[in-house]
Image 1 (cartoon, rainbow, N blue to C red):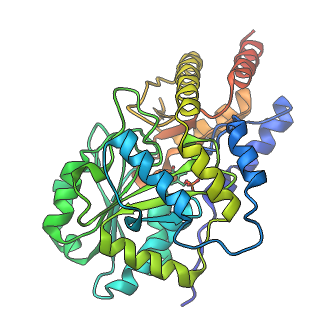
Image 2 (tube, rainbow, N blue to C red; image 1 turned 90 degrees about the vertical axis):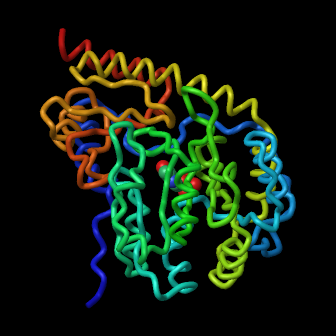
Length: 370
Ligand SMILES: Cc1ncc(COP(=O)(O)O)c(C=O)c1O
């Protein structure tokens, strides 16, 4: 039987975008977590001047990029990871979607991917694409993964457990030490997606690498921290044997981060100042959006991390609210069921637009209610 691809989630919002343009002249897109602000000029300059266009880049990552990742892990998270235990990714999404397939080749006796029931859709998609069982793990009222709720029969069959902290869409923070211990106790690799690690609102971000590297991987991205979603750079780090397997298989796949990108990403990783500035901007904008959504009867609160507002809808219908916001103010948000079947009563607002966009939303609302 041929595999039937589901519709791409964000394509399903195109009618709402058309509606926003028709009624308001433009759509203000807060559906996808794509950064809006510019990366540092030094990073753009590094992209243009690396001289690395001609040759093939090493798939595992150029030494300068891997060293920059190791230095960042050391300086920001106080963990010493040798560069031999780090590999480059072409942004995280390809890695997330490809990982179950590669792990299944490593251990064909396993066929299950465990992932949080409220989460980034590519965890489930990667399992589907590898012909694996995708088994959602319940989350608690703070959006933390419930390790105690994993069925032992599923654990026996698991290729990996995904955790994501701070999480997309709800911004929850998992106990990564507990996740690492659960994985080691059950012989299941735990892969911790930490692409929002820089954006935490109640204390510093955490990495699973702070709990030993055996049996775990952390995955990081430049997309969100440095506004570099357009250049595609990330990395994975952790368990020596797992990293070795992935580095080797990815050479065969041809997964290569372009040389100029690796050079620029190394420059970006060496700079924390732009991240601090960006973090302050996100906080202000999230607070402004909380106020704005309140005027529409939507109760949003600051999450523990990430730049998303995960908002319960008054009538329990995320799709209805996604259409209503497009119609009333031209705002495009994601209905909650993009992030798991249990979440249809939510919407996710990615606060990636700037002050001017938020001011425009307020103007549109004032006009509508005048
Ligand atoms: C939880 C999570 N993981 C991974 C990604 C992929 O990021 P990128 O492919 O840009 O590195 C995203 C993007 O939104 C995300 O939210």
